[in-house]
Each structure stands twice: as C-alpha cells, then as structure tokens.
Image (cartoon, rainbow, N blue to C red; front, top):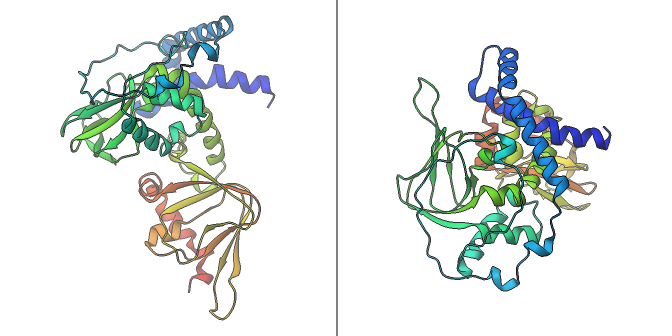
Length: 374
C-alpha cells in the first residue's frame, strides 16, 4: 500500500468504520447491510465534516513544544488531598467536533511527590501509555487527578457520555453490562494497575458498561483534552499494529474484529536477544505468548542423563505458554529465541477472560505436543 493510500485510510476511512463497527456490535442488527446504510446516512456526513474540520485545523495551526513545556519545577507539585467530584453527564457531540484538536495548553493538577510516583508506577503497567515518550508522559502525569470513591459508588454508568478514563490505584471495581430485557452480566473485576473508560474517548461512543466500586477506591483520572492531544494517537497506532498482527494469527480467526481489538488493547510487548530464554521448563507459568517477530525453539529434557532436545519450532504468529495456564502446571518446556524476537503476551487473568471462548481449540491443539508430554 502506498504511503498516501495508508494515510487516507487512517485519517478518512478508519474513524468512520470504527464508529460503525461499535454501533453494529452494540445493536447487533439482523440485517447488517441495511443497518449500516441507515447509520451512515444519518451520521456519515457529520463525521466526515468533523474530520475535514480537524484537517483544516491541523493545516492552519503550528504547535511549538516551547509553548507547551513548563519548567521542571512545575511538575513537582504538592498538596491537594484526593477529591470526590460531583459526576455530571457531558452532552454528546459528533466525532469531528467533540474530539477535534484545538490549541492545547497542558493541564497541571497539584499532587504530592508520593502521588506522582504512584501514578508513574501505574502508567508503566497500562498498555494505553506504553508508547509515550518521556515528555508526553510527564504531561499526562501532571494532568491526572487523584479521585476517591466509596464502596458502592458508580464510577461510570452504561449509556452515559464519557469524559475521562481511569486507572485503578487502590481497591477493586465491578464491571457489568445490561442488554435489553436481560439481567446485568458481570464482565470482570478491575484491580490496581488496570485502566478503563478509554473506548468512550477513542471513539466518542457511550459508556459500554457500568463500573461500581466494590470497596473504597482511589483512581487516577485523565481528562478528554489531554487524552486527545497526548495519548489517543499513540494508542490508536498501537491498536492498529496489534490488530493487524492478530488478524494473521490462525488461532484467532474464529474471533470477530471487536474481540480481537480487546486482545490488542490488553497485549504487552517484550524483546529477546538470540539465546535468551523466553520461558524455562519447570518454572511457574502465568503468561501466554504470541511470537510477533523472529523465530524460537522449544526444548525439553526427555532423558535426565541427556541435554534438552529441540522439540518444536516457532515462527511469527505462533503462540505458546497455554499448557501451563490451562492445566495450572509448571512449564512443560523451555522456549529459546533463535533470532532476535518480539513477543506480545497476556497475563493469566486476561488470558482466561479474553481467550476463554477458545479454550476447546487450545486444548485440542495439545496434540502437537503430546509425544513430548510424558
């Protein structure tokens, strides 16, 4: 694909298709084609006008890093206790107007050194911020607010408009979703280090679920303006990279694009040099891996009096680590990088939540290891 075509796809096509896909997943119409035509006839022109408006702003505005960067002392702020804000709904607007990039002045919220350090630690655990450089990360940290919620407080409500994303610092929160005519269904429990609320900001869609504090909680909140200017582009680039990779993973062919996008958002990445052990035989296994780049081999000790033997070869798009997770057993083999490798991975809880529907397939695929298992 030519660079010009790729840029057109990213800037003009993807924003419309992303919102259309979210609408279809939420409504699940019987006639997808007709529903898409009707949705586009109502919303397409508004979104496209908004995109054109954004492009004009981009062409007319020159942003200087000197205008947005404050002295180092500005980032070392003390004082405010955590706050409990009154929640207010934000009226919905079309993508191009609501999410447009205007002149941006970094927001600075007073925090103690300890709070700043805790935010840094939590951001390091979140996929959403892993692509940011040091300067952008500093802007995000200073814009974040520390918010307390009491047990039973509703942090976000399904169907409401979204104006913030959240990272959990302390406590746990219940995430549930209600479909028309059905009882509320528990989706997951959010724990410290996890983030939520970004979908409403990425795609200007209503909140997809309700999240309630299971106990007294402390959250870090980031506003839409900072997210749009600093985080959003990096997050979209990362999602597109992983969605493209996952679309070529044979194991995931049965999943719909929305399910793959959830996996893409949860993935973390790590690099290995030639000869590095990615996993070691006998170690506890709590990570599931996809090989994004490079080649690796699995080795196993078949005879205690002999060195480990190569029992399997991994290429790009292959996966490993599922046996230990599904059987709750130690690693059955070692996996060693044959070339420089990049892996993307899911932890045990995320693996169960997102790949649970594929457990039967994963179990059936054990046969490729069977001759080496005993």
